[in-house]
Amino acid sequence: MCIELQGNRFAAQAAAGGKHGPRKGLTMIRNTRGAPPRVAAVALAAALALAQSPPALAARVLSLRECIDIAVAGNPEMGAARQRLRKSESDVMSGYGGLLPDLTVDFYAGHRYYGPSSVQFDERGRPVRSEGFDYEDYTLRIGSNIVIWDGGGNYARLNQAKQSREGARERFAYDSDMLTAAVIRSYYDLVRTRMLSVVAEESVEQARRNLERTEALLEVGSATRADVLKARVRHSNTRLDLIRARNRVELARTDLVALLNMPGEDVDIDTTLAIETVRPDLDGEIEFALKNRSELQSLAHYRESARSGISAARSGWLPTVGASFGYYWSDRSMADNLNFFKEEYQWSVTGFLSLNLFDRFQTGASVKRARADLRIAEYELERYELEAMREVKNLVLMIDEARERIAVATETVEQAGED
Image (cartoon, rainbow, N blue to C red; front, side):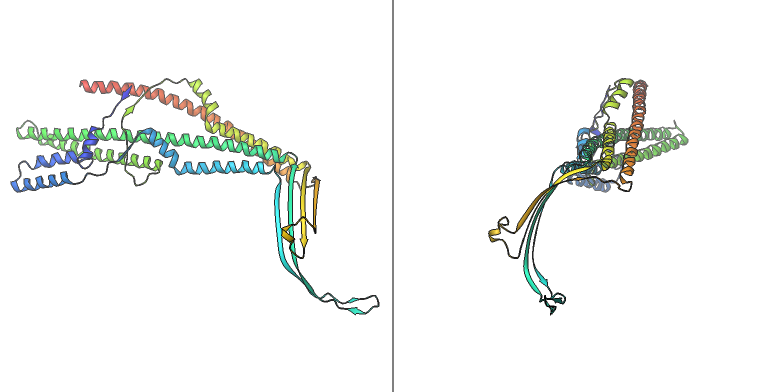
């Protein structure tokens, strides 16, 4: 089934200087037919002035695909989701850095001053007061440390960061899907309100013609004043309905513009509407959703990240193995040609093994927190799986209902046309 809405009426209205330009122009000409020549001349001059005025800027017409692309690229929520993904990628980089040695270089240059020391005695017991002195001081230090194994904590933290990054990627995909769904709903809501606005305009026109016909019948005595009053009330009600319909169009347009993050821009849409009805398989859709929904995959990665967090917490009970390298040079004058490896230097290479025998129960508390985080992640995944199954079933039922509603609406349109 394909439903198409032609845009000729909207194009004609825009070309005439506004959404309601053609109808108002026709009304003005019709009302001035019996007017004095001066009034008719003024009306004709006003019409020529409107015709010669520069046309308004045309609104930017967007298709559904363009709206989705614009929203995904510029929506603030998607911008925040991108930054969360970048944060998770930086955590992975930090995890890799935990496996590499660090390197520090320090250089000091200054002047040291020593005051006189306290009274001392020479070998004969005579008091001696030493004098103060000063000298230049130059020092260079180079150091490097690496933790080869800290009970597996560094590797567990790296894996935890990787799983969190994958979870953030799936979460980003989920946010993109949800924004796409919101754009689709807002887009077709605007299409629907535009269609209803057209129907409301046709109702106003039909009520106006009925009012004119009833007034003409009243003049020849074939209708009563009550009939005219009823026709006027109906005409007024249809005009109010038209105002409400136009307000709904503007509200729907505002919602779409907000999702696109295009404030202040005149945006319009392609009103061509095509509807394809497909009978989905409930069991197949549920199975596909459980395997492919982005938020479920994101929660699965976060669950694995929490499991790695337990291994990282347990590393506090195990020894740490590492090595360090140090180079030290110090003298009272700067090295010739900056050659710090000629004299007055020392260097060392050291390996170490460290075991924290009692850390005041910090490791045990960390393990308990990590296990609780794992259980929370598992419960969250289970809850979202149940929610996904319920949502898919609800959507399938809504599609079935929509198919029936389309069939009923088609029969109603055919019957109305026959009437």
